[in-house]
Image 1 (tube, one colour):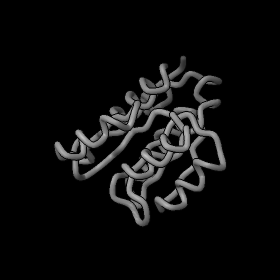
Image 2 (cartoon, rainbow, N blue to C red; image 1 turned 60 degrees about the vertical axis):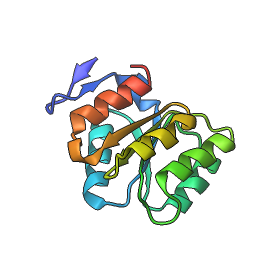
Image 3 (cartoon, helix red, strand yellow; image 1 turned 90 degrees about the vertical axis):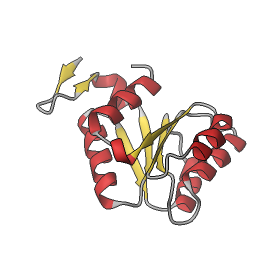
Image 4 (spheres, rainbow, N blue to C red; image 1 turned 30 degrees about the vertical axis):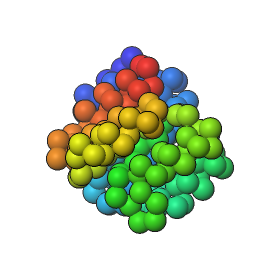
Length: 136
């Protein structure tokens, strides 16, 4: 394992083999996520629309799904539900400005899903969660 100049730990080939679908319509959050994950060696694809994300999930294989809750088209919870319904049982990280109790309760039935509030968003926390969900 090596460390980048930014202090991001990398596990060379393991992380490069992991494919992550990032679904985020906010340019700033999307850029932070993609930059952090790519610097750590992950292969990332992104969508800014929930409907396009559902299509991508049915066409390509991913190891992790990171999505915003509120998106144009299908929202993050519905994307995860649709993926599970189609047998796509990958871990999902839901990032939201709306971390209400109702959202937490509704996601318990979504399988391996974590919720992170954008209020406490930081790239180290995201990377640790991603690595944990992918068992690094």
